[in-house]
Image (cartoon, rainbow, N blue to C red):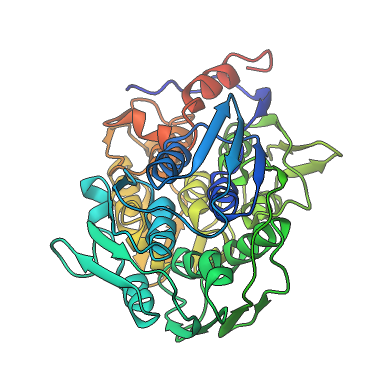
Length: 425
């Protein structure tokens, strides 16, 4: 796909899908709960549909009508069995691996080739230590893997906190159904802590509260989820793209439903844009970002909103001073190597970027010296959408796999086109 550039300031109003991070957590809680849950604003992306399909295969009844899903909980006694295909969804694969340990019937958790290359050993080891049966089909610590368990005692388990918060969340989600609950001991500092806070909040909404989170431990008592009606807030990660577009091109973009007190840590991204010179206006039901006459580089620890490192990099290459992104060395093991692959793509455009141990350094380059080229997405929706932001001001950028955006926001190309066609354009 050859990406269209912008020819003037933007002026648009955008709605984003529901948060896939929140949706997948809510789907697991609803699936294990006693009674019926109704989830509203369920996103349509591949990650969420993979979770729904896996839960159905696992024996959970889910009825969908548009963006609403009615989930009949299994009261903590899942049927299990079958092939649970997570496709490219890391959250789905890791959450379902943990959920599968609650059933005596073995389930095969698998996914696309790119997902099977991603590390899973820390979660597999933790579940094994709790009494689950975890049997890889090929490479140890990777998918595909057979998992079963039932009657796990719980108690205490050790797991690194600096590899992926998804491991920690997976254990938290099943912890209420372990006889003694679970005390998760973190053997290294916790990364992406806002995502663990999201998990605790969603669990609380389904009746499991009192979760204790500290720097090196997380405690969840035994209990049960209760069916409930739950509204999924708009996806703050997706909202970063139209907000960043306003910063890059100028003009203003309003995102419906993006609120200052959002549950998601990624909602703080607009504060980074403010520090770069943009104006941000918070209203009761929306947030507006107004581009600056000159973008200023920043030094920022993005460990709490690591999914948005490619977004920030796309903005930073147009700033007048350097930007240093730190605290995100662990994102090398996401859908792509989100540091190395990001740096390679930016360098191929003519950007002055240096890969560092825990992030990257971006130095200013005149826009007229940047040259469009074919950019690889590496099966990573975040990279694809970041490249689409760079292309707002750099002509000739072509994406090798534009459809990878279906993982989180299938409508992004239409939204981007509508922004380029707005009256302020």
